[in-house]
Image 1 (cartoon, rainbow, N blue to C red):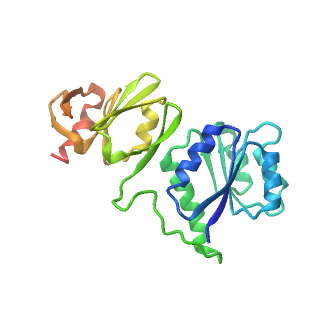
Image 2: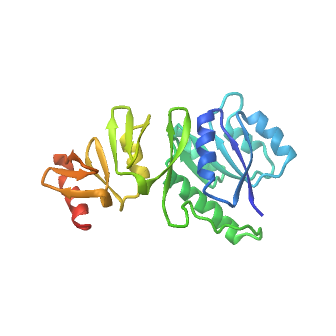
Image 3: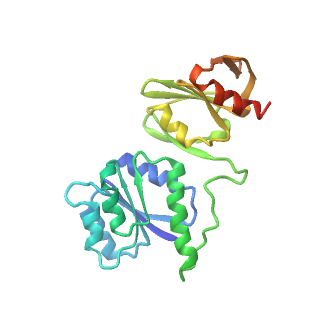
Length: 240
């Protein structure tokens, strides 16, 4: 048995991100998406849903009001761009509350809570999945131009800040995504990457050599910022 899941959000991009994240979990089956709570209410009357991802603030009917209207609501994970709604979400006994933009590592914690519930319930499902491939690689889903692109973090050499954009440098190509470097820093495995400068994050195992104020990666010399020097050298020395 799989966990039948419904995604409810009036933002197409938000729906797309959750769908891409869910692809890492074979036990989760997305049976539908809705862009408003009224449409979702009708669908919930027609089919048995086990799990809902729902935005709290939507036009017409709030996500929290929809959940209150259900006699036996499914497990709920609230999503929103507004932190002020957190308490309201938890008051409805939600599994979790995710603040947009949703980092994958935070999404993973929410899924752990879902699977923990099913492990202890009488409902039998196959939850032997991991958000990685068989080699243990960790993937990110980044919006590149108008599509979501799956990127293996093991292929990243460095990330460079370009104001409101970032450049992800791989061995054979570069990707440009509209987001801030601080957000991506939260998504990258902490033991695999190091922030060397306000504008650069580098894969530790891709560093070819390092000096007092710079490192070499893929034939490129990158600066080490003064405020990042101590932590940077501490991490780098463990691999050299």
